[in-house]
Image 1 (cartoon, rainbow, N blue to C red):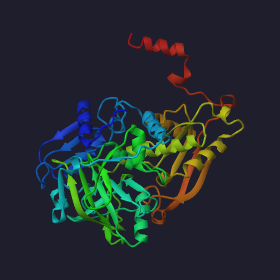
Image 2: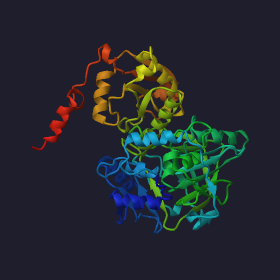
Image 3: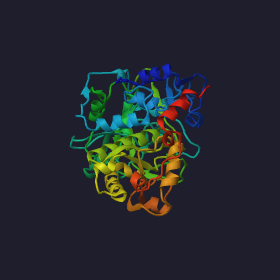
Image 4: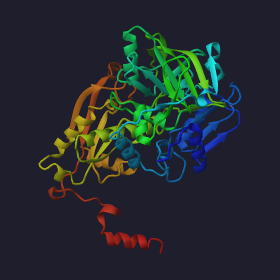
Length: 487
C-alpha cells in the first residue's frame, strides 16, 4: 500500500491521472464555488483546485470534490482508493474488503513528533479569525457559509481514555465563532456530553486538509471504543504523525493544511442550518447547537481548504459513508460467521439502501436453514451496528448479482423483491435527515426499517436460470462469440 502523507501528495497523484483541474480565474465563494463543485459531481469532471478566491488573502485556496467519483476512465473510485493506499483502479469490492479486513488488524497508534508543516503559521488571539479564509456559501438556501464539510473534528473525553476523529458539518457565525451538528448516536456527541456532565466546555481541534485517508476514516462508523487513529495505522501499516496543538491538549496530523483550535460550549445556543444534504434536498429546518469558540489557527503556507457540497448523488457522503458503512457491515457479518461475500450501499440511493450478497454455497455452510432464517440473522447483525440510523432498507441477494452495477442491481431489486411479502419490519432510531420518512417520524428520530429476503430458491428447488449472455450460454459458445465479435 502507498501511504500519501498529505493533501499535496494526493493532488499530485490526481494530476498524474488527469483528474485535477486547476482554476486560476477569480471565483466567488458565494455560491459560485458550490455551483462548480456540484457540476463536477454531476458530470464526473476532474476535481477543481481554486487558486484565486474573491475576498480572500492571496495564496489561500479551496479544493473541491476530494472524494467524489473520478473522471479517470475505468477508475471511478480512484479518489477513494488513492486515499486509503490502494491503486487507483481498485473496484468497489476491493475497497470494501480492504476496509473490512483492516478491522481485524492490531491498531497502530499515532506517534507524536516535534513539529510539522501545519506549524508554518501560528495565529493566536484576534489574529485567529476565519475572516482571512475563504469560507463558502455552498447552496442557495444554506443558513450561512460552512467552515467544515470535509474536515476532521478531534475531541477527547475528560478522562483522556477515548479520542474521537469525526466529521460533522460546521457553519460559520462570525470570524471567531462557529456552530455545528452534535447529534445523538454520533461519537462527538458521546464525548461532548461527558464535558457537559462536568460543566466544562469541550476542547476541540478542527483539521482541514490532513492526509487523504483522514476524512475517509473520520467518516467511517467504527464501533464504540475503536479509535480512528489506531485504525488508520493498522490499515496503512504505519503510524500517522501528530503534533501538539497550541492552546488545547489535543494532537493533530503534522501535515495538515489548517487546524482550528478552541472550545465547544456546553449549551445549545446557536441556530444551525439549514444546509443542502446527502438525501438530495435542501431542508427548511434548523437545529439549536453548541458554539465553537476559536482560540488559535495554525496553517501551512498557501493553505488548501478541502470542500464538499452535499446534494443529489454522487458526492463524498455517498462514496465515503456508503463504502465505509458497507465495510463495517461486512466485517460484522464475517465476525458472526455468516456466509456472505460482500455488502454494498449503492451511491445512487443516497445511503438509503444496503445490499448484502450471500455466498453461492450458503446452504452447504448452513444446512437446514431457510432463506428467511438467514435473512433474519443478517438483519440482526446489521441492525446492531451504529450506521443503520441511515439505512431504512436492507436487501439480501444471491451473489450472482453484481450489486455495484446499477443496471443489474435495479433489475434484481425489481424482479426478486416481493412487493409485500418476505420482509422484516423493525422500529428503530433514524437520522432525521433521511428523506423517505414523514415529518413526524423525522422529528421523533424513530421509524420502521425494512429488510427484504430476496434470495432465490436452490437450483434443485425451482430456481429459474438467468437469461443473459454470461449465465445462459455454454462457456465454449461464449468464447467463440467473443473471439469472432469483430469478424
